[in-house]
Amino acid sequence: MTSPASLVFDLDGTISDPAVGIGRSINYALQFYSYPAISEDQVSQFIGPQLDTTFGSITGNSSPTHIAALVSKYRERYADVGYSENILYSGVPEALEALASAGVAIGLCTSKRVDFAESILRLFGLRHHFRFLSGGEIGVHKKQQLASLLSDRTISLTSIMIGDRAVDIEAAKVNGLGSVGVLWGHGSVEELTAAGPNALLEFPHQLVELGNAV
Image: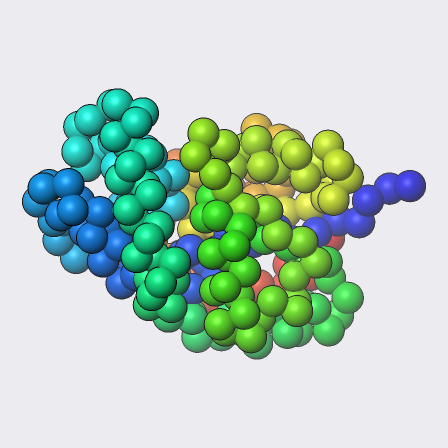
């Protein structure tokens, strides 16, 4: 059997804006370990990369044990309240509804842990649109997540990865998938253009047109 083509969405910066919850949870962990807090202006650059990469970059510490402790402290607050400090992008729910109603297979591939992704989608009443969720973990990169989805035939090579950061586009290209960058998230037009997606979208309503490509 041939697996169906899918639209595979990133979560943070693509479906919703998690800047408040992520920023506050990063600072909760940093301050617990006596590091200075980051400013609101710095948060955006850390939305997309894995948490271990983020904390290593902020602290300059490369100890796996210490980084794991920072991640654990971050998740302590994020699980409690951080996940809900989140804003749904205007137009995204309508686009997802239209795609699902048209029979398009929709899935999620996020570097965020899968239980957090579940909580966010349920918070916004969107979980029922997604046929599968792939969540990340420390040491597992998005390109590996997509490779796993291909290996178990959850998606096919005609599926399209949709995200707001270069890591989404690069992960898709490594796996031979199509890719679409969205400009309403945290990646700049320069970052996304340099990554070389098949298309760039300015507005969420344009997502509906992708249903014709799979």
